[in-house]
Length: 168
Image (cartoon, rainbow, N blue to C red; front, side, top):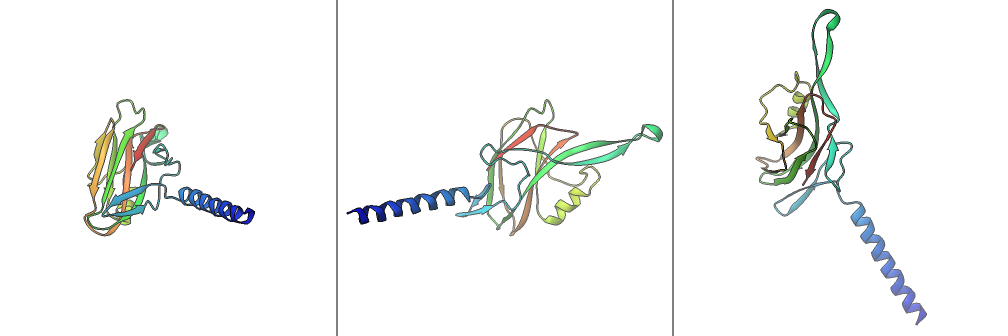
C-alpha cells in the first residue's frame, strides 16, 4: 500500500512541476488569429506582461538653434513590438496612455523590418506613416494583409517619461 501511495504522490508532483513549467514559459504576449497563437519576437525592455505597462525607451532627436545656443532636443519617444503574422491573422488588444497630460500617444503597424529601419533613421519620424492616435483607453484591431514580419510601434511627440499600456 505504501508503494502505491508513493507512486501516486510522485506522479502528482511531476504533474504539478510540469504545469508550473508550462505556465512560466508562456510567451510574453500573444497575437491571436486563425486558431493560432504567435508570440511577439521582441517586446519593449520593461514590458510587464501582467499589467501591459512599458516605458518608451527609444528616442529620435534633432539639433536646433545656432551658434552658442545650439542644442539637441527630443523629437519623439518610441518603443515597439515585433511579431510574425500570416495573411488574415489578427492582432487585437487594448491600449491606454499613462499620465501624458494633453499629449496623445500614437501607434502604427509597420509592414517590414525595412520600414522599422527607415523610421528609426528618419528625421524625427517624418514619413508616410498611418498613425493612429489615442488619449484614452482604446482598442487595436488589425488584420495582416500578407505573410511577414511586422512591428507595432508606439510613439509620443517630445520627451515622455510615463508609461503606456498594451494588453493583447
